[in-house]
Image (cartoon, rainbow, N blue to C red; front, side):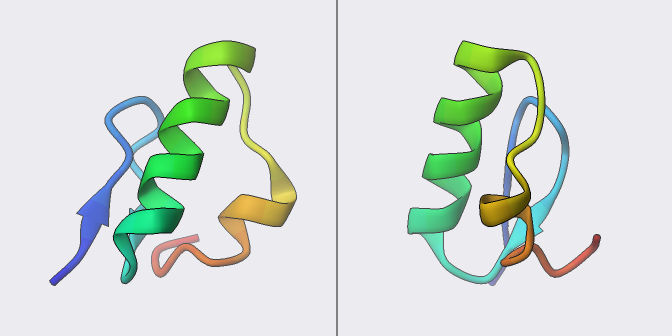
Length: 42
């Protein structure tokens, strides 16, 4: 199962990374390289 960030559309295998990505994207309107390195569809 993949979890998708509703802001940037990146997919993650683990829900914790999807949640961190959504939190970052919503606050900063950008992506965080330390989070997106865990994405499966970079």
